Image (cartoon, rainbow, N blue to C red; front, side, top):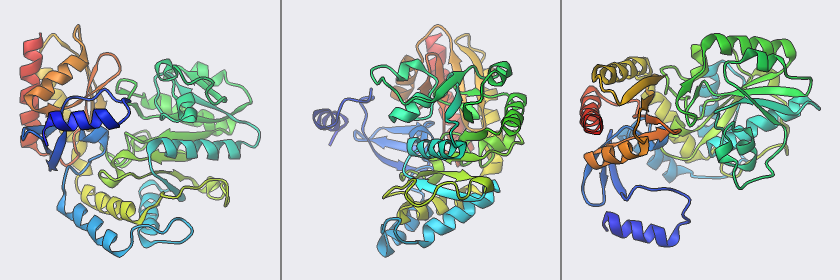
Length: 388
């Protein structure tokens, strides 16, 4: 089948909830993709930060095949080795106490919200930040601090209050109804906006003083994306709940949240559940991803700094501020729609992303090598130069 025939088939039978590019990818290997017409692309998007170990990694593929051939799914009515081993590894990486496995980032954040509400024991309001993005369920939409995502879906779940990021006075002005503060270390969908370290530390101290929980959404920043296993580890704070998803299983659907010792037994049987969460195949994949990434994490910040420096050295008037950390990079595009730039990049063989109204976003696989970085940057330079 061709790009056009697959597009037509999809358009005829899948709901039109996405603004898709007219390309159907059929194969991936490492940091390269191929479409149905045989065209090759460099991947600076990694499925929106998901394929952290690239495409078709043989160790990952074997782990999935071996687990699928042994045991695929039994539900959470029983114990499985992959889920138990993965939970142990995640608690080791975070120095936290317990894990709940779900299927996606939105579900992970829903669970974190439920923990906070139950722990709050009557205090139910959760403070989030303007510009944040926490998911597309009705409740995680309510938590999201961007009005554009709220259109058409009112009434949203009550109990959320949005304050400007970096504004400690706005946090300190909150009343006795607050049970938690929910933040992203870098606001991804909000334009790749990193939070200031001093602000996060002050906010964490305020949470401790007021008895609020500190919830950190690491759906996009977690699993090595910023150069540490979790983005909050750059700040020197101890969260109460950390959510994760995207890069954890290398492309299979897995998410969840990790809790501190004081929250270890807040949720009891019947309080929260999922049929698929902790699926044996997904957990086996995730264990393999963590093993593959372990020797790579230390290189992520250096790779990201290299990309940002090379873009600055292009010295193009169309390029404004370059934001982010590690391999989570946002490039402000001036006087030109980033979506149009992104379409031109795709035509030239580079898959990238946008964020917000004026940001071109790169989330390449964490295993990306110098040759692919340089090849992608060459395409970027050519397109930006022509657009200037």
